[in-house]
Image 1: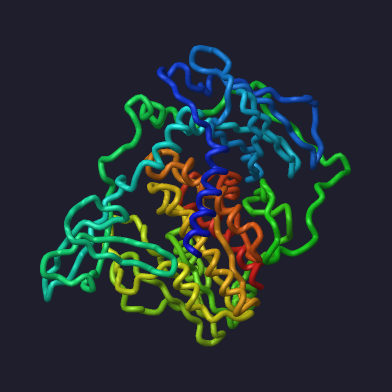
Image 2: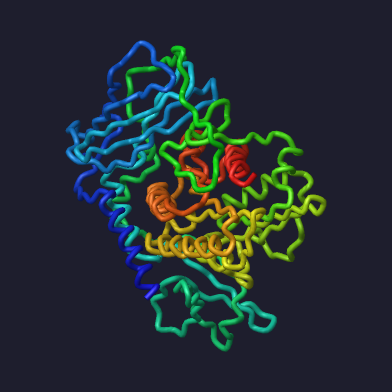
Length: 486
């Protein structure tokens, strides 16, 4: 019964995403969207703008033949910025579904600003990618290592193995999360020790569709003629929030802006913990669990470097992806990072001996007012059908609900994905996959009492284009976390 309800929820979210994604066919690249032929027009141009004003652009897209497009669905990224002020903010894009878009920016700071509107993928590419993602699990190959006495035996593993060979099934019966390996001869399934992965030479795109994803076609600037735009105070100020960022607050889009390299949320105020003493006061007696991918492992690495009183503890792990555990025995601080369960994509061997999915790990958290959990999933799910990510996040949601029922004072924070490098393999790891997961993530957790760190929006504002952004970006993500828990 529970499985049926979960499947209904997955199908409902997929249906909603299907309605948001374009569904278009094309026979000639020349009929697809051309960034260089498209036009951005500044509406209601003024000589000078005031703080808090909205800057509105009409974007009309054209194909390579110079013909105006009659449908929408292009994957666009809009940003306003001032390089000298180390300032930036994302823009909100409204798709009228007829080849016209409205791009809306809020002016958060004084000075000269510039506008960037990028065509990441044309609607034809988005449509092809969305359709291709539904077609299978074959883009990643998993290799499992089994221990046979003193020898290692290697075998194929995955979510959907097409073979008549005997399989080892690793099933979480409650959440119906399953992973399989071809059973090695004369070796029990319990002898599964390590796993790694590599990209398979598999594509669900046609040759014509692939031609849309050359690096030179990804993230192309749409031409503009309006140059710098000047913003003055006009004796007015942007109305900034007075309340401190707190668990349970809803997060708008855009969720904030960067100024002087610091992140400023628009819906709440953050605490600035600039000294080691301030950070240690915040973390005093805290038990913190980072659960997920390497983007929260990066948080762990940043904290143990910045907070010199935290000492990494040898947890007898193996390889580059061993769990991390740090303590400060004087202040009773414990922080740990543990990777999430399948799929974890890496060429490095990692142990599955202590493997658990995030919902299982959440069920082992006792929780109290000094306990905080940060969950970040997404990057490793991009190469697989969307159902896998949705099912996992619905299972995480259910586990968060159970945690908050038994320990309502526990602080749970969901961290969204970072945007990736422009040269990332688009079919496996492209940001269009991350964006659909980001939309789903916001939907799944919107009515739960959790904190949300909109790393997606922050990544765009900082224009980092890196799955592992620079320390100043990581530091500002962590500062949001500190504000939520202290």
